[in-house]
Length: 218
Length: 293
Image (cartoon, rainbow over the protein chains, first blue to last red):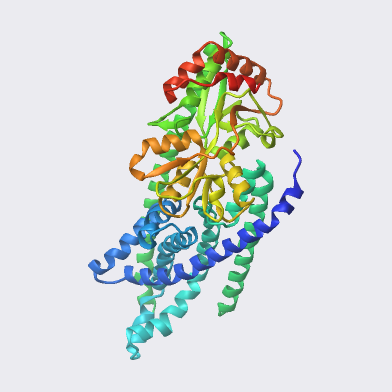
């Protein structure tokens, strides 16, 4: 087997463009997913079962069905319904956001609920309101505990963005597949893509590591 | 403080134990399912080798034939079975050559990996013979004449390939439709959307994300015929060259001469025309096919 480095070199601009798209949709997915995840996580913790129900349903659906299916549903179903035509990038960001937010909601819930009840009770007894207690006592401790699972989720999301190739989001895997379709080569495009993904996930875990260290109190 | 802690601690233990009990029960169930799954796989395999052993005496070797299986009416899934013109043709040819076909649907892109890796004996999947592919694979003699056509909405003003400039074109990744599109709007153009199968490409057209699909005439015509309510039409462009489908082999396959001979027999003895008639309702142009050999 001869490994064609020259083909990879020719294709480098497309790999580069794909990498930028991968980073772009992943960052947007992480950003919106975290915001939405916080809302849904808090929603699920509502005492009123009726109010918490839609949030539960959301998590059940997006955590219980494959992302692949969700991507196709959102691209060919939801997005044309809303904006009148398909838009792969919008559909991709929406799919990643909704899927990630279901997991992130549970991470938030776990983080908040892992803080001892006594902390809230102590804060309340000092005269803080529920919101103040959350803001100044519970969340600062909870966020620290959420960093490792959130980091996990972000890395999974980055890798899952490769599934968007199926709806032609021009991200890394899309160009990898296009390379394969053009030259009928297996190793060259997919090993290159794997290497780039590895670099991306390693950089991400490095950043998360730094954040974790900075937040460490001991 | 110790008094406060103690009950909490013992509660934790009981909860923990309960949890462990549940976990091991789930674990046991998982193991059971896994064991059953493995047993099922095992028995499947033993069935396969048993039948292989039976026919071994009669020298009827089984061929692993791979196909895309999402390409009606050539090769597609009907219920749990793969059917189509290509499938009937393959069965006839393989029987003629004295083999047993084991046709497996694996998707388009994996075909090339499996054939290059020699994990499959041959592939029948409406694969157009071209020079690029010939560098890496062997082809049989041509068995089907095809050309690319443009699929557009009925109210579209596209009359030929040239009208597609600046429009979004959905294609099957790595197909000759993609090559045709590249000739119009340029290689690696952002206006070409490469999908994993033709149905997804057509879906993109229907959903408004693409202005046209370029695919083999068989697909385009079959699709418009099967879905008249979707208001699509097929546009022909004379400048799109004739294409010929061939059976794909690994480079240097010993099977090629045998299958070539069998294809010629099937072409000559009327069996080919019979299958063609069944699927397309017309007579094939066997002369043009044979002229390509």
